[in-house]
Image (cartoon, rainbow, N blue to C red):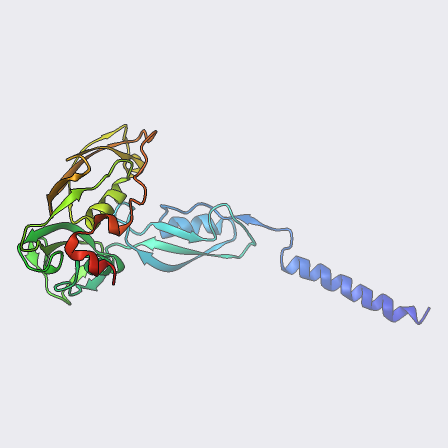
Length: 270
């Protein structure tokens, strides 16, 4: 029996250690992470404290249609099961957009300028065209109707007007097919086609901003067609509908080659 004593002691120690470890790690204790979207930091901290969780703000972004200072993202996500004492990392909506340096777009191609603006978080308000030998080359950059110089400070999310060359012959482009596209996709196609959005005449069945974001184009003016050509920088009016049955985008609608003018084909191939 004395030989078994060390074995018994070791087993007892292992059992006690296992029990302590389960207690220390709260093995069976889990908490559901609450949904913090839209809550202020104070509200988020109070909600988390009730579940023995804590908040850590790791970043901020600017979302125009969200309350300032509210939670726009969280990790872990709402509904996840976590241990008590876990930190929940939050991204808040900034009080105002971050300031950035305006890039130099003049002398870039339209394609290059759009890429730079997208990377920096700036938008295109419209594209204006003036006679110039270089078709679809940026010849001026405007902000609120006035020239804006490179390195001038500007808020992220602002809209820039691009003044582009229309060529010496007054280039005309086919009217693109917009049927079945969302509002965001329409802007993408019009940018590629060197055209502008005219009027949003109607959004049939739309009652909330969310409805309009999911709605699709059911009609456009002028109508699409390879033989229906309009001047660079012209506008297209659209009608949207929340009823998307039968509204499908054209095949390869997001292929830039579909909207390339003759003088810019070489630039796209770079």
